[in-house]
Structures are given as structure tokens and as C-alpha cells.
Image (cartoon, rainbow, N blue to C red; front, side):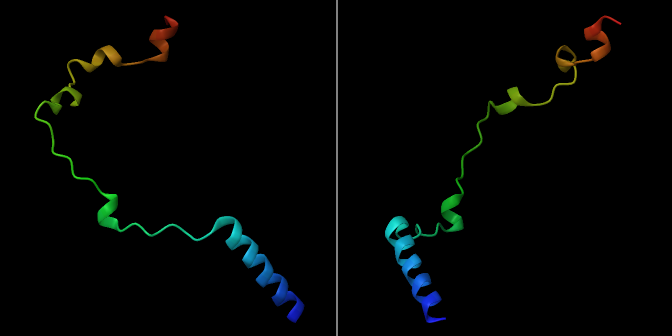
Length: 64
């Protein structure tokens, strides 16, 4: 059993030498970014009268 522990310790030392330590943890407030909304963002809004151009129908595409 001591032999297993010695190989585990050696393997741990090899891993530490190869990979070093884990990166520092990032706090949740550092993961978020607040961006102010632009007033001209309405160009991406839904327009039911203009969206008929983008409607895709397989029957129409096949000419049926």
C-alpha cells in the first residue's frame, strides 16, 4: 500500500510540474458586463408586415 501512495505522490508531482496550478477564480461580478442600450436598436425588432419577404415554404420553393 505504501508503494501505491508513493506512485500517487510521484504522479501528483509530475502533474504539478507539467500543469502548475489552477488559474485564479473569477468572481461573478467580473463575468458580467453592463452595456447601455442604444436608442436606434429598433432595426432588429419584429415587423410582421415586412417579414413576409423572409418566409420560407418548401412547397413554394418546389413550385407546387
